[in-house]
Length: 125
Image 1: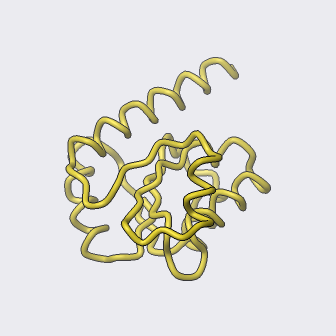
Image 2: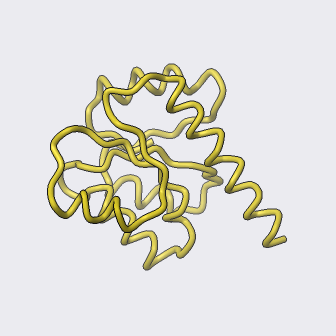
């Protein structure tokens, strides 16, 4: 999970840890390093708007440096959208959930994202 707001990250982490192995990055740059480190990540919940490296920039960096990894991002979005963010979300097929969200919505999206990733891995052999 990539989330710069500590309270949101910790609350969601506590809920997710009941069913998922959760690694937490508090910035896009930290997430990039973690993801490029080769860990087995089926899905990555990612805040779209963060200071420093945004979720958009993380997506683009992953696409350039580890093609296919960007498909694992599930974006968490809030109300303060920029024109760039709206355009980006219109262009990508990644799942997204709006803040504030309920845990059931996040859980459903993660189950779908994890299943899709595992199917891709089986297809690739």
